[in-house]
Length: 446
Picture 1 (cartoon, rainbow, N blue to C red):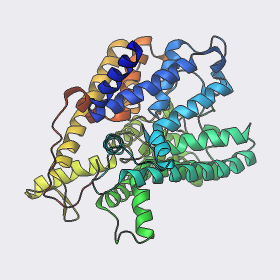
Picture 2 (picture 1 turned 45 degrees about the horizontal axis):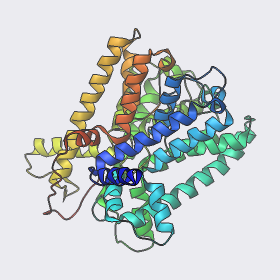
Picture 3 (picture 1 turned 60 degrees about the vertical axis):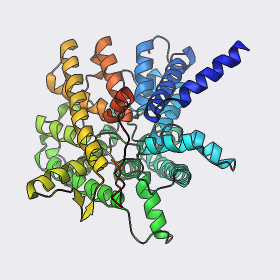
């Protein structure tokens, strides 16, 4: 009887939580379970992974970051690697997505509570139905990851990679979830000139980072459910294209480390590295620690802008970046309302974008400052590591394994905050008003 009362009290507590707090608690539960499983003897090589390293890996996987203090391919067993894959798959598709899919597949409808949480997880505009959206997420994920694994298998087998089948599955899911985990200690430096592998991974990363909103919206447009793409989709596609093109051009022209490569390999390296930073996929085909300070700063800016809402990537988000840009433009032009292509943006979305930028900058500065206090490592490496952790990217100049236990805990906290976003973390702490401006007709996710 007492046990039943305890469970009822626990469920009442969960039902009374703010949705953002519940999402944070959900990701924390994933991390805790993953940590415990990865700490088991059969998940790792004897003596290779400490309890802190297992916690670091679990947090990195659930947050789809990819930073690692030990070798994924050598220090974890086949069982441990499967657990890591499951963790970044769950982290990539979002908390409660799998559970909601099970509910829908049984012919049941989502409760109002699940729908409310789903809106929080995916940052959806008000005109998208969460039940149909989740069906789209699962279908799109299964199709893309399966096709990616098949294509990678052929490419890796042709390249002579060891165990190409498992490697293809692992890296296909890792790329689409923008997780950045690799079974190779040098990521994809050994395959820098392999066009097929680079293109497949790049496409998978962009498909994951662009987000499920774009897929659902484009599909509705193709089947005639809507007459045009939503404002969110147009902002995502245009911003992603411009940011990527600018990054590729700059890295191709100014980076000394790739300047001596053949022209096609130089372009391939620039495209792959920009894609890894902009989508927050976190792979690398050139040694990050060997890049110039200008290139490191460029990649850091791409990591901060990040992927798109309702996608598998992290960062500030392309729509948030665009909204802040629109605020600046509107202020310079003396306009009272902020708009994209003549469409007014809801005031609460504008406020959320500005708040996200402020909180993101504050957390990044604080994280870097704390690392500078605890670590005797170059400052540019610490700043890059902080940006990579908060943006859930996974790129590193090579200092991750050198961090002190306190430094690792700081990075763990940055990765956890980055998974939900600093704004969501702030909401979970302070419970702001969720009032909405109902005067506008079109919404954009940030």
